[in-house]
Image (cartoon, rainbow, N blue to C red; front, side, top):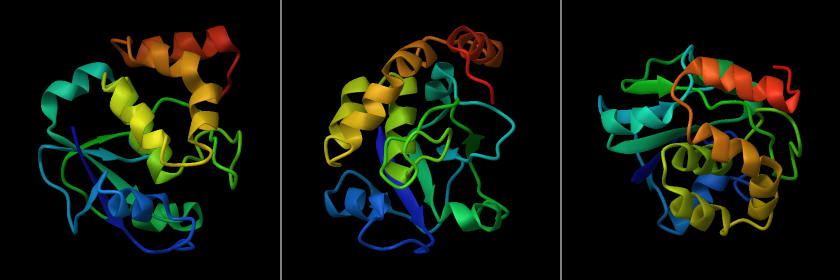
Length: 164
């Protein structure tokens, strides 16, 4: 699965996971999105499901500051817009905060949900804290990779006692 990032350059360049993914040729920069892209959008009404894999040929992470996310996502992006099911951040800035993921964490989670588990783990290996993200969310990611509907997400969250 191809990975792309659309960067707004709003974060500290030394901490920018999108820049590191481009540097290591895990992802490429894009200036806009296309119809057959999965666009990771935390404000989307719909949750990413494994069956979405059939509708896309690449994943686009919108890289912006969480403090400016509402502005960044107010722009119109073409493609299949999906939010990730709830996950805990493993990065040092937002450690254990629900849904405050870096671009790399979001991309890895989407790969995992779509069935590209080894690609997700390889991506996380590029970050010192990548294993932490995986360890915090391993069981959830495994379950999310088997869901068939948004109702399944709610059931999983109830089983784990996670309130969103």
